[in-house]
Image (tube, rainbow over all chains, first blue to last red; front, side):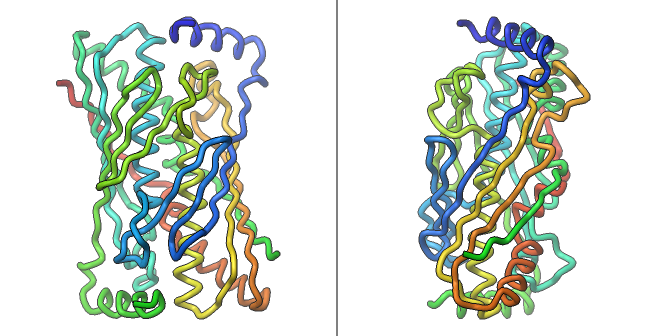
Length: 164
Length: 164
């Protein structure tokens, strides 16, 4: 099925049965080295690690890089889906994401310094033949409907510690 | 160098030279299939995709799963580092993360529904021989210093669209 048709059918089905939109995503992250972590999500796996400056072996991207890449990926996918939904085609999209982090927060050297990135900069580079006005419309739809961007503007996190 | 020693040297160096804590992380996310995205972060690469229900080929975890796994990974690594910093050893840690998402937000079926996960549940499963009080202290340090957890409670995102 073409993507535009799949989107239209999904929207119609969700409008008729709003409860069908609910999904729960689950991951498991297991520390398997000094800082190396083995992750699973459904049938997929991925590794996270830290560079030697943070005690790791740099076996993979680190968690902050996964967040930035997840934001870029989510924007790229949201460009695709909303391009189809709005009928605004493009040829290529690449999303570059940067985040500044001061590791004094992580190490507790200065507790006024946030542990994470205080700001994230996102640059979506789009190539295509529609008008700048149409692409501005598409970009606004991406900003509004990108799930990871929404999560980074503040989500409620409920944490528990289970001793085994 | 042992991790505890590396942490102590890093903290001393950062206290003496606060500007040395600044780091910028960068990723590039390029749409290479219907919803498949090729990500790079320094020398590392990873793929994101969506399942067929969202038009993809399920080649890898999706962006929301990467965010949840990044949070679990970041907590696991923060357990390691703060375990060393506080002298509270453990044998194993595994972090399970769950997020509920209603895809009506993503598809714009109901604009009162957030695009992302409204709530994330985190369960850290820890095995070790220190006291529950010590592990509660460690858990509190993790909650306070985990970079990805901090980012998920709200970060400023500045977005630009570049037409090529």
